[in-house]
Every structure is written in structure tokens, then in C-alpha cells.
Image 1 (tube, rainbow, N blue to C red):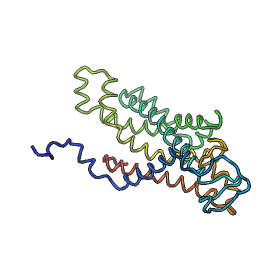
Image 2: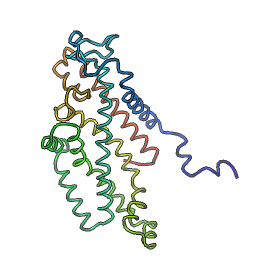
Image 3: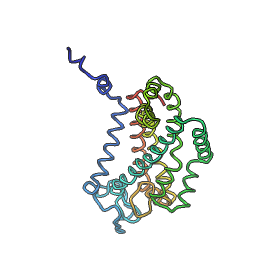
Image 4: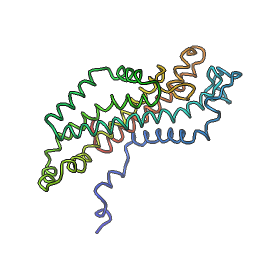
Length: 281
């Protein structure tokens, strides 16, 4: 028997990676590596103040310049990658889990359960996303924990609708009917047979959603309701530099560029995964 015949059916799909997937993975990998190695590669303490060198433009000593407290912008961006990556990944993880669970149960159970779940979704969608997040964080208290809670309470609806729609289609498939005829329980059919077959689209969507979560996190921090100073975080850095935009543009320009690069990386990663897995958005 030839070597080609011995290949698993899925192996050819892994042979050639789409260019967006490679570029996105490379960008995100570089950011993750910088975040992990921040104590080693960052040239200065990100919160150490040195008023003797405040508002210095980019130079050999400070490649990205310094802010109004004399803190090195490059060091703060490198350390800030840790916070922004954490915000993006954790901010997506909880809505993904909550939305997937609710959407799967609603789609499979149908009738009253589905109706109640969809009415809750409609209520959440009736409010502007960012406004609802701001209200929840204001009720709690500024900080990362409140941001994650707000994301979990607001962001799950997109995943619930996506999973529900796919479960509604798949629950009438032949393999599901066969599983029922064998006497399998409903939880086993849903979580072991249906759910693994509908997660691909949600996983691809979650990569795109990370971009929105990072932007929302930066916006929340910019408004003073997210990460609190003097912690190095890109949204805070942009907020702190807004009063110096005409005299010290580098304070806001470089953190803004970092957000753009991270957003581009996750966007390319989502496009590449969608192409790789055959998912059309």
C-alpha cells in the first residue's frame, strides 16, 4: 500500500497554510513572546518616573520617547502587551463559554427554553453594546474584574445566536437520530455528538471578537473605568497623552500603533482560520 493511501483524511488540510493564517499567527506570536519576555527585553521599569527626561522625543536612549512623567514609552508598551492580551483572551473566553452553553441548550431543547433564551438575547441586544458595558462597570467598580464581568454579561449573545442556529439544523441530522434510537441521553447527544460539530464557526468568530474586546478594553481604560494608573496599558497611555498630542505625539501614537498591530494580527488569524477550516462568515 502506498504512503499516500496511509495518510489520514485530515492530513492534506494541514499541508499548506493560508497566508493570512501565517501572518496573523506570526504577529500574535511575536506579541505574546514580547509579553512573556517583558522583564528581560524592556529596557526600563514601566512605572519608574524620571522627570529629568520627561517628554523627550524618540531617540537612541528611548526609541519611542518618554511621557510627561519621564517613563519610557517602549517599556510601557512591552509591559502593556501583557494586560491587553489578557483583556482580549479572557474577555472572549467567558462570553464564549456562556454563549455556547446557552445557545446549545436553547437550540436543542426548543419550545419554551428556546423562547425564553431568545427573549433574553433580544433584551441585551436592545441596548448599545458599549453603553451597557459602561453601565455595568459603573455599577460595580473600575478595574479589570468589572470589565470581565461586563464582557461576560453582554458579549455572550453573539455566540448564543450562532450556536443555536447551527444546533437547530444539526439536531435533525441522521447521526443524531441514530444516537437517540440507541437510547443515548440528551446531554450526551448534545455535548458529545452535536456540539463538537458546531464549534468551528464560533472558534473562528472568537478570533475576530478578540479584536473588538481589545478595542473595548482600550476604550474603557481610556475613559478611566478599566485598568487604573500607573499600570502600563495601551488605552491608559493614549488617555494620558491626549493633552500632549500637539507637542509630544509619540505618547499616543505608539500605543495606538500597538493596538492596530494586535488587532491586525487577530483579524488575519481569524481570516486564515476561516479559510483553513472552510468557514464562511
